[in-house]
Amino acid sequence: MMDCTDRHFRMIMRQVSRRSLLYTEMVVAQALHHGRRDRLLDFDPLEHPLALQVGGDDPLLLAEAARLAHDWGYDEINLNVGCPSPRVQQGNFGACLMADPPQVARCVAAMVAAAPLPVTVKHRIGIDDRDSYDELLSFVDTVAAAGAGRFAVHARKAWLQGLDPRENRTIPPLRHDLVLALKRDRPQLTVELNGGLETLAECQQALEGAGVDGVMVGRAAYHHPLRWAAVDAALFGCTGTGTVKASTVLRGLVDYSDRWCSSGGRLWAIARHLVHLVEGVPGARRWRQKLTQAAVAPGAGPEVIEQAARQLEAHGT
Ligand SMILES: Cc1cc2nc3c(=O)[nH]c(=O)nc-3n(C[C@H](O)[C@H](O)[C@H](O)COP(=O)(O)O)c2cc1C
Image 1: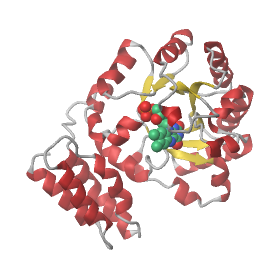
Image 2 (image 1 turned 90 degrees about the vertical axis):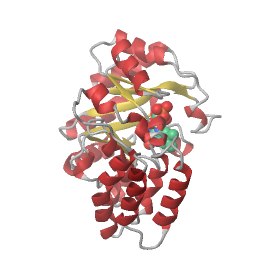
Image 3 (image 1 turned 180 degrees about the vertical axis):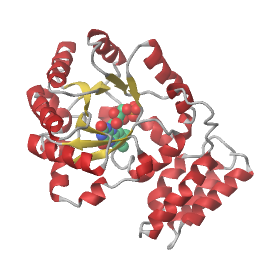
């Protein structure tokens, strides 16, 4: 998610779940060709398993992105066919590509040929008036034949004209039923449900009750990271992992923030994501204020994270 799932937020989530697959923000293939690759691609080895999400419509540039993803050590490359923003539409990628399944297939085939990495696709259930279930099936069939290994389906259509990106995440109704039908009708494909999943119980129901192969959580992970503290035990069968507390997350970030700040990074880049870590406990607001004040101060370093952890530990949080 743009402006959310940068490397720092991913490190935070990695303290919460060792096993969940994490995704980068969308990186535009053209920018990878021309831009500062280290800034766009670098990540911490602790972030694995990690998928690089890319946006683009040019098979040559996307093949290059797949090679770079492999060289950088990503575990997967994911093509964004779901973003409806005007800027992305201008570049002819994101959700508007759902109108051209053969082009998406050419992009996927080029990526598959370029690097030995799983190539996956994130898409909508439809766009504009191309929103019938048959069109969804036809899109998925065409792209699967090109070698896409998993379909992460945001269970909403996108209106490319008239709704802004935020409205396109709320106004078109959620149609989980269509994603479940897709899995039922194409049992050989790996189908991941996305959109509106708020709790671990809802994810378990989708996986075990409705039979999708995976679930993808966006906003509820960003805004409520600790809500997912039991995910490794519940979904991956990990035993003896103990309960992750807010203070455990912070302790897990001390060395990382030390490395980041020592290499010239600002602590705020990490701390800005921590404001959602503590919620629903007395004093949470005050804790957030203190952390924010300390983290924006010039020269702030890992001691701020340690101090914030100590404050929480004193309350057993
Ligand atoms: C701030 C924000 C940025 C997003 N950026 C991306 C993105 O870069 N790539 C992508 O595939 N989806 C992006 N999305 C969409 C989410 O991945 C997800 O499909 C959508 O929010 C529905 O899932 P949710 O209800 O679990 O959040 C973004 C969503 C938000 C709120």
